[in-house]
Image 1 (cartoon, one colour):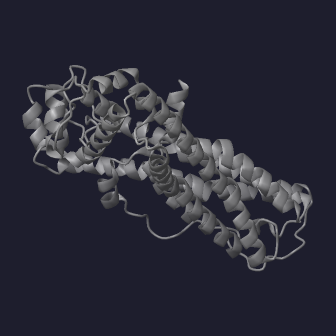
Image 2 (cartoon, helix red, strand yellow):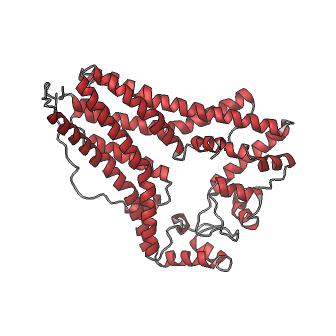
Image 3 (spheres, helix red, strand yellow):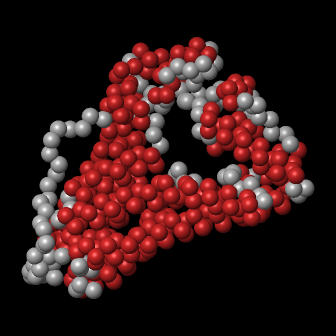
Length: 411
């Protein structure tokens, strides 16, 4: 993978790459050091316990958080396929629109893509069953990681600390200010069906956000006392904001600032700004695009080999079959494509007005790469340093101790 491809992946705040870089490569190692130093103020044993718990918690959670939805999604898709249905029929197609929908696509593509149409017909004939299977897939790909991260992993982690402390003959030297029982939540099973029917098409990153919410609930529930519960609730809520919300708005802010300072458009993907074929087409102004949002699907179907259609295939999720017929099982997000088209037009116009398109694109690539690096750096600093220090400060104010709230009873 080239450097530009890596920059592109890390800059995609709706993908897994920036989460991996921030979480596993920067945030966790920094947190381990801060955790050890903070708890060392209480005792060396507390520091050792805290770092071990944090290491298992952070890296164990990351492995489940990032890999769980992907692996479980593949497993569920195989099960759905064995039941004679294609899991790739997009649930959004069940809502008929004037230019796409399951009935609309069956009629439009019955001669052009008969095999794909058969998948649509099977899903339509077994609509309720298919929707239930997709609902079950959503439940499995979110509920299992939530249980593993939020309830099972912390309980096992706490138990390991208890066993190790007993072996070291460490006795509790300070009572907890208020105890808390470790238990799984009782009550009936949650009903995911209605929710999953609308969320079946979620990306893996969006599913990670959902599991993060469940993780927060689980961690608070399994906290060993009310101070640990309060701290975990605050920490996880802030981490969700800094992982999923803040980087998106920060990226927009940095790109907007770059426009004002350098008078350059950096809203496109770095890979595209580094694409020589694309730059050549900008020079010749030969990228034909649909004029209106309502014309997008028609354009994609009539011009499958056009530069714009291929760009939509790479950057907007449009899928074509091997014969370059658009896959009728997939939903076309015309809103996303129209926004992409507008950004393309802006870049083409400004690059051509610059009088040196190659120089303009190279400068745009450098500025965009710097913005991505700044985004990762700022987000990582807030996650890895600022947030932990804020938590340490609040912990001292609330509990009067530097030790992890759950370890206050262990000397």
